[in-house]
Image (tube, rainbow, N blue to C red):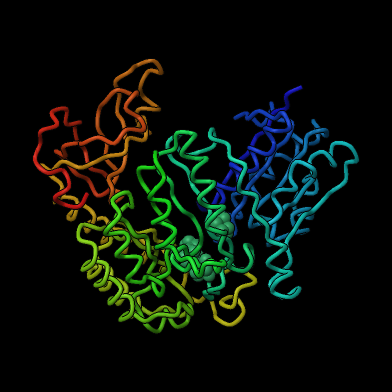
Length: 474
Ligand code: SAH
Ligand code: SF4
Ligand code: F3S
């Protein structure tokens, strides 16, 4: 008999990928996905702890299930992922009707735990060791991945997939909970990664995004020496069917020349680098324990621009970190103006219990100030994005077509063949254009006639004898 699974996912690409694996493992047990909680036999939340807001979202979703579970006590409710690892049994205290709490390093146990609840009831946890609860090896072993299982229906599109190359993080930035929830940094073996990429290619996947907390720190020490991200990308480049390779996220200190040259020399690799700066003030970076100075970052940007013409760089920022003065914030504005990122993800600092920041530094910037700084930085970034997008007016860009745009999904009739489509350039800019839905998965030239801060608007170039498509490196 088929059973129905409802799963809600918040957080980063790592969590999207984890949900894909969980769904694949439950499909093997006869589950089908449903969008309706009311229909579901099992209800799962794959959670994030990176900011308080993400946790609130999950706790309020759980709150809404209180009555539902009373009416249907046979249903299984599970909390998975980073908040499960962080809050552990506290989740049972806040939502006593939750049946299982499973950390990101134990997700392979989800199918068995669901069966256990169905047969014996009771509340069960499967969690990894804390960062101080054993030897490094024991802690590492307690964070397992089970990546070989894939479920194409859970992907961003059928042509795009995430592929994990690394788990955990050892950088311990003072604001960040990730090293606690995801455990020590560990690179997967290149053999496993290549095997999985071959499986994805055979399934028709054209774009692979390598994921990890700091992928450019990736290292795997094998019998034939140490493999780094550059070597891994070169091997993946050989796989037939794979047309685009991306990787997120990067750590400024580890942006080595061999990686930049590989991005330059191997055409399938997207000329796009997400490498979070977080703050433009040396003092703030020091309090964040980011391990680089503004000058280091500047030199890294110069290296990127010199080595890979036409590349785009994007960043993350935290505003209102402990003790951030107007002057320090001003330095962030100047550096943003100088670096001219393609786009930036900007976050208000959220204190995370369990981090060094929460322990030693005071979260003393008022929320209104964080909000104002957030808006200010965002508006400067948007202005930069719009200005830099102007360069594309009248140019042709190469777009990997992803499918109907969000607008088309809401406004077009389900059967219409020609509708608004969306895709991305090699440097990760979003392009919107009209076309047949069958074009999804193809790489096409699109002529750009209008730009906004977030998108390039264009039309598909049907005449292929157009001047150089790649003169901008796009
Ligand atoms: N591993 C990635 C980032 C992981 S978290 C990296 O090192 O770049 C994604 C982003 O969330 C971070 O880049 C940071 O900007 C933001 N972030 C992390 N912890 C935060 C916190 N406590 N409050 C606000 N933003 C935070
Ligand atoms: Fe968090 Fe820093 Fe690790 Fe990124 S590098 S996951 S911000 S601790
Ligand atoms: Fe959130 Fe965990 Fe990712 S805390 S950002 S889901 S690694």
